[in-house]
Image (cartoon, rainbow, N blue to C red):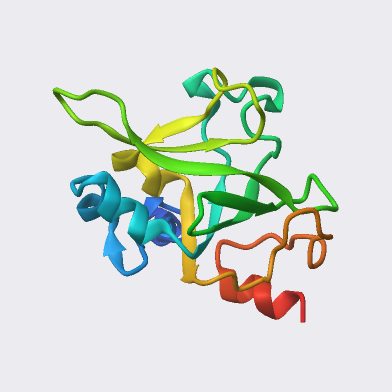
Amino acid sequence: MKLLKTFLVIFSLLIITPQAYADSIGGKSIRAIANSDIKTASGIFENQTILMKRLPDRSGYNKDKKGIPVTGTFVAYLAKNGQILIWSKDSSKVITGIWAIVNTKENKPRMMFCMRFSKNKEKVPCMLMKYIDGVFFDSEKGNIFNLRKGASVPAPLPYSRNLSTIRNKIK
């Protein structure tokens, strides 16, 4: 019985936990970003390459890829001008959209991270900033994969939760 308990404890340590997700972006904690103002939060996200997974469908905007035209994990570059460039396994070309951080209520601010990939302003997938660490895995400053609007993706996107591993796999 002791051997079984020891095995279960060791096995539980090997399971991927929320700690596998990013706890900071641009050197700032997710909690600090969520508690800052929109200008500060946007400044932290600008010029970052982020490895993330698709926002959850429970928001109601992502069904049938209408809100975000990708599945699974993808690399996103968040440009200073509000443009988002995406490298995913779903497309041989870089997908372009717009990103923004917005407040949902004036009297009780609730900052949200939003992305839009079509002209349909009603189908804009957003997620509360305080939960964004559940979809972000890793980040690095700059456009580290040199993503460009309409260009071919650098390579088929290898599976990883780490940007440096992806960089090494595509060399």
